[in-house]
Image (cartoon, rainbow, N blue to C red; front, top):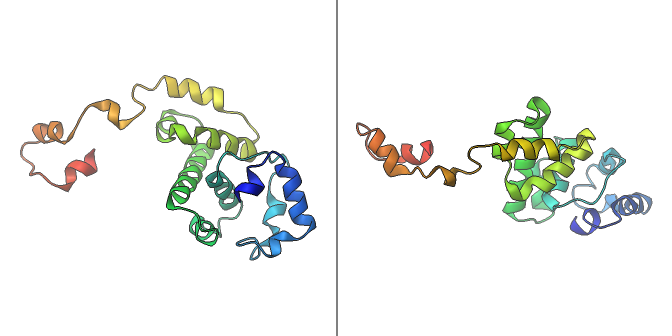
Length: 168
């Protein structure tokens, strides 16, 4: 997947795949050969493999992210990243750019997310997103400087337990 979709000539690679009917032998594509035809016409080089999987899952929700990662023997980190991208894409399509989206999108996944939005929505949200992101009072839970001991001190009547980590 990386060699096909992260290269400089993605559109040419996709056309060549269709021409030689490579999708008939590749995992996942052999079950649904029409997937390549459903890609946006303006497809450009992807940032990560997780982004590729997220786009294909968005195109055909019947093929799970787990199926993609298992059939292509990809690490769980890729699966988690693709799942995150799809969840945030769905959120963006429903609510647009807001504080919650800016807080939830990890910094290392921002380029993939912006590219994915460009392919799906044909819009560039980077500038709008960055304005919201830079105005967030807190961009990470680590910045809160609030830990389990602080929470325990606030709620002395509650015994120590799992609720502390769940609350944090």
